Every structure is written in C-alpha cells, then in structure tokens.
Length: 303
Length: 303
Image (cartoon, rainbow over all chains, first blue to last red; front, side):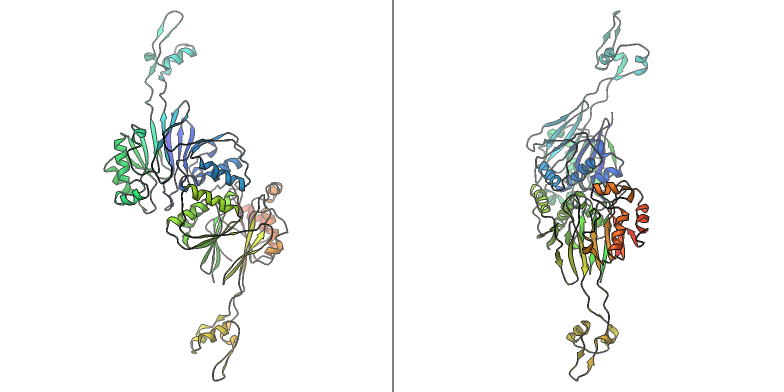
C-alpha cells in the first residue's frame, strides 16, 4: 500500500531561494491528502505532476498565511476545471469565513461541495478515518491556535500466498477468513489453516506533521512511536532565543523530539529566510538524530 | 526618465505551463508601482531581482483571485522584513475587508501604514498624481466591477545642454528658467536664450492596462492615443463566443482596439490555460496590429 509524502514547500513565512511556503501531498493507498496549502501550492502541484483534482482531503494546521494562502487559488482552479466531487477541509473555524468572503466578492459559486471539519486546538481528536488510515490532531503551541496531524495506518489484513490459493478453488468467504487469520473448514471437513496460506501483513506505520510550534513536551504523547516525524525547524540552535520568542523550533530541538518520540525518520522543514544553505541545519539535527532529512521541494519520502 | 514595465504574470484564472497569474511592475523614474498581484507575485518579484520593499503603490483591477491573491503574502512579507514606510493600495472597497479578516485571524498587526483609495467602477477618475505621472482609472466591463489603469507621464522640462551650461557660471534660478523654456537676462543685460542651452524634452508617454474585460468601445476614449496598450487576450478569435460569455477578449479584438486607440505598441496577456503555445495568439493580433508583443513572465518593455 502506498504511503508516501511529496514535499511542495519548505519555507517559513517569507519565501525565498526558490523555496515555497508549507504544503505536502500525502498519497495513502492512491488517495490524496494535502497538508497545509501555502501560496503557490497549485503551481507546485503542477510542477510535480500531481493532479489537484485527485485531492480529497485538505488539512490546514493554522491561519498564518504561509500555511493557507494558496487555498483560494487551488479551490477556484478545481472549480474552473469542472470538479464535481466533494472536498473535505479540516481547519480552524475561521478559515471558512476567510474563504467565503473571497468567494462572495469574486462572485464565485463553487460548484462542488466543500465540507468543513473545524479543528479544536485544545484537545487532540480523531478527525478522519477510512479503511486505510486514521487521522488525529496534535495540539501544538504557536502564536495562534495550531494543530499538527498524525496519520496512522490501520492494521492490514494478512497477505495471501496467491500461487497456493489459486491452485485451489476456495470460495470468496473462505479467502476473507484466511486473510483475517482464521482457519476455514470445507464441507468435507478439510481444514485450511490461515498460516499455511498467508503471511504476516506489513506493520501499520504512522506519520506525524508538526508545524508550527515552540518545542515542548506536551505533544510528545501524541507523536510517540510514529515512524516518520515531520517537524518544523525554522532556526539553528544558536537562534534559540529567537525561536522561543516566535514560537518556533530549532533543528537541534526537532532532533531531540524525534529521539524522545522514538521516531525512525525525521523530516526537517519550515526553514527561515535567513538560511540560504540548509546543510548546516541538517548536520545539527544529525548530531542528535542521525536519520534526519531535509524536506525540500520535490522530494518524496516513503513513510 | 525610466518608464518601463516588467511582466510578472501572464496567465488567466488557472495558472499552468509555468505561467503566473496577473502582475506587472512599473518603474516610473525609479519609483515602483505594482499593477495586480496574483498568487505567487512575491516569488516572481524575487526571481526578477525586484525589491518588494521599494513598491509604493499597488493597483488592483478587480477581485477575481488571479488578480489579487498574492497580496496578503506580499504585505505580510513586507511587514516581516521590517517595512515602516507607507503603502498605498488602489482597489475595490471590498479588498480592505478581505485583507483585514486575514490579518485579524493570523493576528498580524502590520507595522507600516496602509492607505486605501477605493476605485469607482462606474466613472473614470484620476486616482494618483506625483511630479512624474498621473494615474487614471479605465472603466472596463467584466463579470464583476473592474477598472483598468492609465499611467500618463507629465510634460517634462527641456533638457539642459550640460557642456554649454557648465562652461558658464549661471545661478540655479537661471537654469530653472532655461529648463522651463524661458530666457534669462543677467545683471549686465546679457540674454541667455533657452533654445540655445536646451533641447526639446521627451514627449510624455502613456501606458494603459486593460484587464479583464469584454471587448467594447466604451473605454476607447480613456485609452485614446496611449503609446503602449496592455490588453487582455484570453482567447483566440475562434473562441469569440466563449470570450463573450466569460467577459473576455480575443487576441484579434485586442489588436483592433489597439488600432482604434492609435496605440504604438500592444502587449498581449492573460492567456487561457488552453494555450500551451502562445505564438498563434501573437500572429493573430499581428495580422491587424503588427507591433503586438507577448507580455510573458520576465520580459521588460520600454513604454
């Protein structure tokens, strides 16, 4: 099952050096989830060959412009390109007002349904679930209400040993039993043991998106044990005071959180305009958490 | 005196093929005027080496997203980069509400003064004047209220023949007289004739920006005699019905308007996403108005 993320933007508030503001496209079993939607996201989707119309769910962490300003353009283009299927937006309640005032004055009557789920910035919640994944909020601490998002795969069915099964002529319900780890007994009393016809499923994996936030331990429970952690690292650690004043995190702190959360992989992003070169931020994080990576535009990470 | 325009965006509503939505930077005697501000304008300014902080005046034609969605990002970046000097915005009144609701929810307290002048979409008006230029609105006809903008240089002073003047020791007021075409008589009764020490000034030039609009002759008076006409040409003429339905113009019509307005140069822009190649639009316009040009990203036109 596909479970990967394409980075569309790695910049913090003032985009520079060809870096774009925050946006990521998650592909979960060929369904598209967009996390944050900074200015230029629709252009970044085009550049990365990603069909915007395939996006079903959009998650907005908070209402600083670098995390949502691309939304009106994206929604308008979906409309102009004939979208009919619904779009689900998970965001602070005020986003609806921001979008609607703009649609009102542009006299844009969006032809597809937009369904909102308003996030709560005080208590973590489950906000979405389908057959593949559960999405929960992470309560971050920024200058304005802000939530991260955790995507946890559901436990998969056991994998069928196709050659073995195809040699027989089992009815479909029998196959469903075997995939669920249960044995099947046929009319003649013959027992087909699940373990003979299946192998263990892949372990469910989890991805946490944490941006923007001051470094604290309050959200550690929410991200404990995730396989991949995306964490903002706006500054290097020599700027720790500035990071705290502005409710941001340093690369070193992001790495410390990855260690404490027992993550397997750390993606760094949301880089300040003061850094033309990003290698120093990466090296700083790697001193503490070796499997750190730069989440820069166009890179795709297996989660 | 500099009088040129840098094209930052040439796309209509749905940006594609690396084309950006509408935005143009006018340099008038080293002062910066931005016309429209589609999504990604701040990134386009960076790419073209234009310092955003030098922009003093922003003109927004209408409230379709492809003409203003880059504004919140641009204004926020100006703020984050420490701007103190005022910014003047000329736009439909509703833009203020759109901006303010976003600044409210992002808790952004813009530190520099923003002064609004609300455009009237019914009657052409003079909306700005300084020592170099007068700006007037052009009443366009689009799906929502929309004005174009005409920038007319003021008549310049006569040009001083520096070598001739420097050989003498004339007082400053005498030089001011000569530049204004008046003769100067010194204490000894000696007459210095303006025509001996100056040459004719450059003719004042005018630039008209017309986007978005259906083709009609109502605004012809407003643009009569401009040197350079930027006119939207969203479609080719075989799409004339679609152009009329959507209140847009074809390349052929734009050229006809340029002829009727006695313009010297026509810039075509606001191209539909249906055209990957733009050469056919150019050729169509040139059949009627030979000095037509494609106003594509990064090009600079002397006005």
